[in-house]
Image (tube, rainbow, N blue to C red; front, side, top):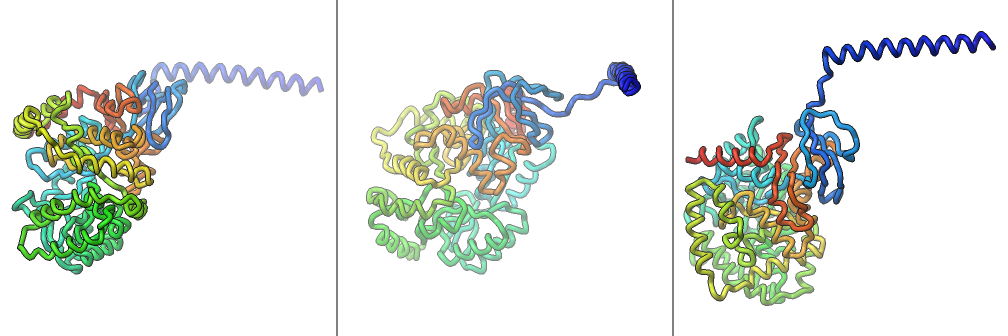
Length: 491
């Protein structure tokens, strides 16, 4: 017994001396050749807000390259290369603009990526542009060293026998699909050229619509759509993944919906030989307000139930602009100052005239309707996505998305639900919810650092301290330089 106790004692003593020697050697080694820190970046002591996890206070979020690698309480020690102090700040996922047209107006094309990033828009969905224009834009935005949002694109608007955006009355971003065979060939060609989804437009016939849906499903492409004028929202909606502007849904909510539809089908025969744009506009003018005035709640509830799995992108900043004109906002001039000079000067002049001479009797029937219908759809559980139609109708790239969030809150969404519409919903559309839309380990490093709480006021999403895009952090100064560089490139 005495021997074993002595052996035990000696072994411990030897172990202690060995530990002392090893510690000395390690100390010397560290002094001569320090262990390099992690290559990651940490945002410390920040309040994290996203629609998946809600509010998490006093957090440290670490990203390394284009991946979030840790989300911890701030009392957990970190070893990173760069520390960003997030004290009294708020970190949200990078925002999407879910409806843009990068090639619609050549004055904006080159500066759009910088404009979007300057407002915290780290992903965009382009919903219509000709391929010969879109492919170079997408290639440049997706270049390895590009400072640009992630971009997902559809190619041209897939219209019917008559094309609305034909290059005559409107910029050319649409293409003709007069027969089902043409439609199927078009989708196959777009898939081969690398589109991420397709966009069906208003003038397609039911047969062409069916062919486009069938081909898109065959090629595993998500489907975006307007409600075709030849169809009812309750019939077309369940067959697609998203619908833009809530347009043409009013007819399916009207008490006299069958009669309106019959009239529409007769008009679509186009005996007068109108252009696609003229024909569409005439039908909207003829039927939209009367349909709204004949609103039937029970019928509309059935329509919304049919749309329960189809994301609606109401573009309220456009559809209900009279409720919140951008040119009457305090920050409108700042927004214009970021634009390329030729476009900024043009919009400054035109909106100054509008601001100085507002119409005395503005008919808000349509504006009121779209706010109402957005709220009703949201209450019914229909998913809502945030998009703007930038740059159509004085939509400043980036800036207008924040206006859309304000309008969604005005329509009845909570600030957190509005954030969901610009983060989670777009990710779900592309089945990317495991990669984007929230701030969790393993997600892509797209985030927005704010100086004020967006849940207290959704307009605080514009209080931007910095943007993380594809793992690169741009503070306010770097974002300003990005804008200046883009403006100079347009001269």
